[in-house]
Length: 189
Image (cartoon, rainbow, N blue to C red; front, side, top):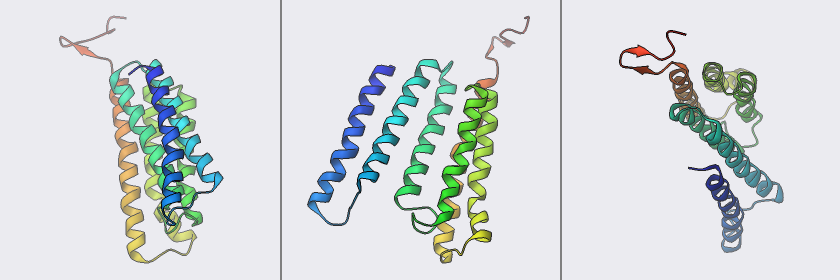
């Protein structure tokens, strides 16, 4: 997919993120978004689209592109879920802020490694570990919800940790030299 196509789809998605909730708010009383909610949703969609367009243009391989796609997709859904309903109790529970904070490892790793696969692999694994321990940190720091809600938090944290670990595995694979006819490319250099 070309970057121009991605940006066009991003514009359509941003428009839908505004129109669908507006229509839903007019038809019923269950959904109530503030201007801030709309701004965050549009910013998230546009940010994801711009990142995806830039990445598609620069990704050296399909594996690298897949690793970036998994990381971006997981980040987007994690932020959306944390802000919309919350993973730990409600979206207003302060422990939920640990999830976006853990994504700073991924962002810092991406900047520090300049999207190079080896560094990205390490930062994805660090992000996976940080996300996995969020419920444990929350147990020791805050009063926690009932056991069923806590179980949900552990399961969701595990799913997101697995996604980031999977991205790390893909980045690690992308960092290996390609093997062709039993000989590694560039072995004689």
